[in-house]
Length: 157
View (spheres, rainbow, N blue to C red):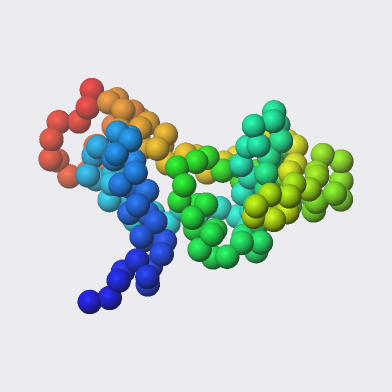
């Protein structure tokens, strides 16, 4: 028998994320666990993502080409929100370090990263938050899913 994690690192990370969400109490419904384990989050991200720096409207940009495939997947499957668009422009188009006002170089343990300013206008939302909203009784998504799913129980009210 082969190690499925070795041949499918994204699948292993999705299962790890689902386990984390269960431990944190965000994920309780087995059907949503199946969804978390099945949906490839990486296909919804562009060529770069931005995470908050903790300094107002400043964002640290990580470009897919600047990290290994494994490092990219590790970032993608964290229970974090990643901005994919700042000020209505894709993060992947953010200015190269030092090439425009509002960008600068930050040297950390993982090397130089660009920091840009802007307001998030699109994101890949924190998976734990998404699952909590989906599991809320009366959630329009939950109600819609219950209506379209085969009858198995009474939908939440």
